[in-house]
Image (cartoon, rainbow, N blue to C red; front, side, top):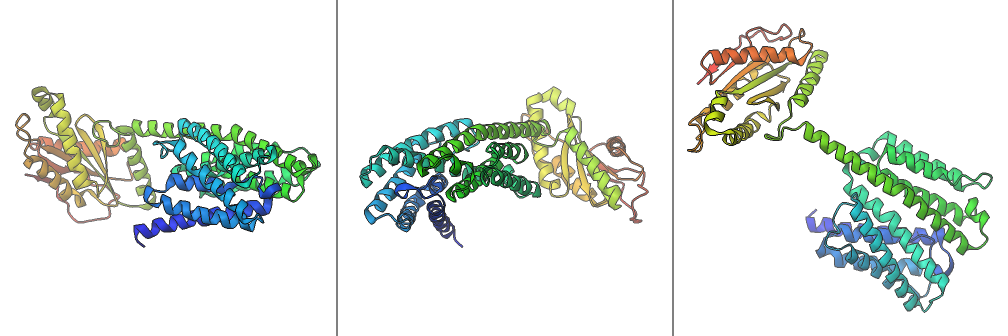
Length: 469
């Protein structure tokens, strides 16, 4: 399928989803004047406008207009009124899209974007209400309040849910876990307990479930939970069951009360969910910064040694091969003293790029500190990685450096195998360090393998001990 075809399929999907949500709302919560208690289709439309590119915005508006007209006709209103409602529905989406401004693509997880969205849907609801009243010739206060709150809640409930699911990658991963299914099932169960009976005042239960979903899943879970509560509450209220129906005799009063309940629910849970998600993302970024060397972008000493410890545990449990290489730039202090630390940093970055290019596919690279690096090779012994390490050494020695820098930069590399007698990463490091100093004592610009053979190594073939240029 071509890119254009996929984009058109996306437009068709949004249009059909709009129709499905509209029909469901009219069927479940249809009230006076053919207006539903909640219009989730508006939320679908807004999300589609925010996610669709400019070339497909026209087909999207046309598709939503067609499905909106069809849904309104299905709801039992006349042609002229249905056209008026459809124009109002289309207008509200375009107004919200325009008010969101040039930064409308900014992730919804930012408080500024959410605030701008709330202002936009308020303006869109006012414009939509005025247009619907004008075209349907029904300016009564009941109609105006019913339409405004209906589309406002539809946008406030559904649009953030879709945007969070699209933009919150961490939340999407969590939603696929059994834990997420259990939490959302709990939210559904608490909603049924609150709205399916009138013996006990339990309308606080859905809020407790949403709070739990917020902490357990994140903002995507909160948004989906709000949709679940809305669907369950709408269904039981439309069936004439539950505390809302028993407390109010007229449909208008039931709708207004349920809408006010949803507003309180959204206002009390969604901002908290966004805040917690933002704090979690910031903590992850800080952790990533703490584990990433600022100069080279490689894993820091703490992170790479933690990875080595994990690799040693796997090798011990699976009786597998494991080796490491320690790489050191020869006479690097002299380079810094003679050419300056700025030139030294450039050399370190260049050597890092060479290591990524030649060793990155074979193992995990980290910076131990200064001019010393380590590479973890899982599944192979040191003699099997001697050649690729030596190619790196030769490439560094043969590289042409700028005229204001050193003539040559050479590497000494020491390799060591894992042994069952090693219990800590430091023990493997000492073995590789011993081999590294053998290479330096041999004249530098060479590779050496630890002379002590690992008892766990099953390969009886003799191994090369030293490689030099």
